[in-house]
Amino acid sequence: MGFIILDTLYIILPKKYPVKNITKHLLLAGFSFFALASCSDKGTETKQPPKVAEQQVSKPVVKAPDFNADSAYSYIDQQVAFGPRVPNTKEHEACGDYLIATLKRLGAEVTVQEFEATAFDGTKLQLRNIVGSFRPDLKKRVLLAAHWDTRPFSDQEKDPEADLKKPIDGANDGASGVGILMEVGRSIQSDLKNLNVGVDLMFFDGEDYGEPEFYEGVSQVRDSYCLGSQYWANNRHVAGYHAYYGILLDMAGGKGAHFYQEGVSLQFAPTIVKKVWDQGHALGYGEFFVRQPTYPITDDHVYVNRSGIPMIDIIDHDPASDSFFGHYWHTHKDNMEVIDKKTLKAVGQTLLGVLYSE
Ligand code: AHN
Ligand code: ZN
Image (cartoon, rainbow, N blue to C red; front, side, top):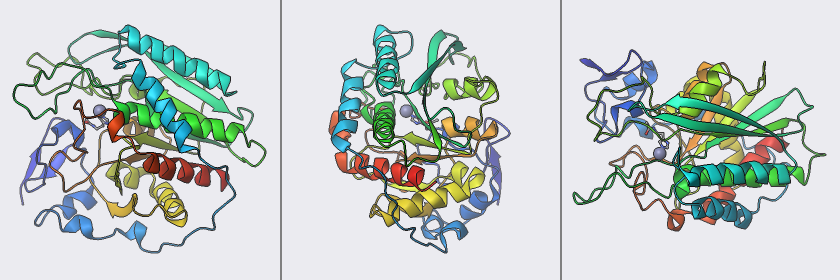
C-alpha cells in the first residue's frame, strides 16, 4: 500500500483514500484509524461502528428549556437578509454589529476581538471574533462555536457557465450555526437557575475565506481557512481563558442533515462525541446523529483542539456523496430554502440537553 503526502506534514493518505472531489485541504490525516479504514475498497469500512460507539447507554432526559426552532430560524433569516457576510464589506460589518447588539440584548457579557488577518491572496481582512458569555462568574465553562462570515465565492457551482466569484448567502454554511447558538443563548438566559456551567457563545470570523481552486497566484498563507479560530488559538479573548470542552456547529441546519462522527472530533474529544450523540439519541433525534465515524475535516475545531480545548464538530456531511458535503455547499443553493426547522430543533434541543445535564 503506497502513501501520498499532500500539502503539509499532517496529510498522509493511503493511495486508495476515496477523496473524490474533496479539496485536499479538507482532509487531515496521520490518524492511523482512518489510514487503516481506507486500506480496502471504499465505502464499506465507514459502515462499521467504531469502538467509541459500541456501548451506548441512553441518558435520562434532563429538564432543559424548550428550544424554539422558529426563533432560531428567524436569527438565521436576519443574518441572510444582510446579504453575503464577506469580510471587508459593509454587509459583513452590519451583520457583526447586529450579532453584538443581539447578544447584549439577551443579557450576555460581550467581548469583541478585532484583528487583521492575511488572506490566501494577500488581502488584509478586518475581522472580528464575537463572544457572548453567560454566567461569566462560573469557572466550569462550555464553549459553543460557529462561524459568522460567509464564503466570498460560489466555487462549487457545477454549471461551467457559472461565475464562481459571486458570494453566497451562506444560510447553512455560517448563519445556521450562529442562529442555533443565539437561540441557545436566549433559552439559557430564560432558565439560568438550573444551569451548572458557564456558557460562551463564540462566533468566529474568517472561517470561509479559504483558497479556491481557481486561484492561480502564489498562496500567501499556509492554512487559508479558519482565520478567526487560528487567531483566537494564539490570542484568547480573555487572558487565561479555558473551557472544559467545546462544540462547534457548521452546516447544522440543513434539511435531512446527517451528523456523522467526524475524525478530528473523535481523535481529540471522543467522550464529548459520545455525550452529544447519546443525548441526541435519548431525545429522539437518532436519524440526525449517525453513530458512524468519518474522515477528519479542517474546520475551526482543529485550531481550538490544538490550543488545548477539546472540541467536537457537528457538521452535516456524507462520506458517500461526491462533494462530501451537501449539494448546496459553496453554491447559491445555500439559501434559506435549505434550512429546516426540524434540524434546528434536533441540534438546539440536544445542545440544551447536554448543557443542562452538566
Ligand atoms: C474546508 O472546506 C477546507 N473545510 C470544511 C470546513 C468548512 C468550509 N466549513 C464550512 N465551509
Ligand atoms: Zn464553507
